[in-house]
Image (tube, rainbow, N blue to C red; front, side, top):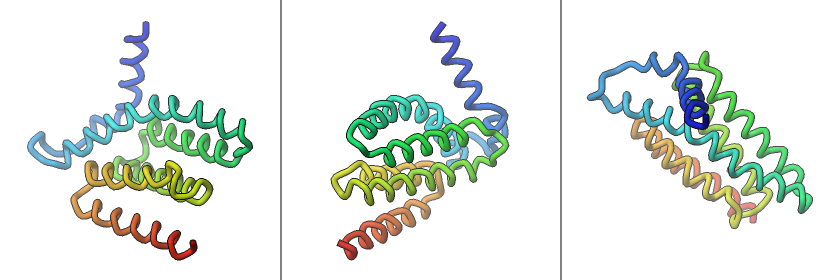
Length: 154
């Protein structure tokens, strides 16, 4: 039963967009697109595992705004995962934007010791893996500017 559900979930995430991947097996962009789909496939279940206790603890200790932002981020992640009409490149950008907004919010609310800084590092790694090479450099610059602005404010 679980195996059937898992296979149906995989087919739903792939959808028609997966068949529209252009390029040959020898091209890097082909493998970047495949990696992105695998990221989407595993990211959603893992996000549920992370969000449920996070929302519970946020509400329990009075951080309702964090719980709301976490739920909104999860809903946006679900939308990007399951709406196949969005072009692949735009889906990649939406994921990066969602993670950046979440990272900046978490750094603002919880400070440098919170998970926001780890999101910034993860964004750089994800961008370097699923986009062309120079995009990774831009995320490093963006992360440096974000963290420098917080340092100036402090």
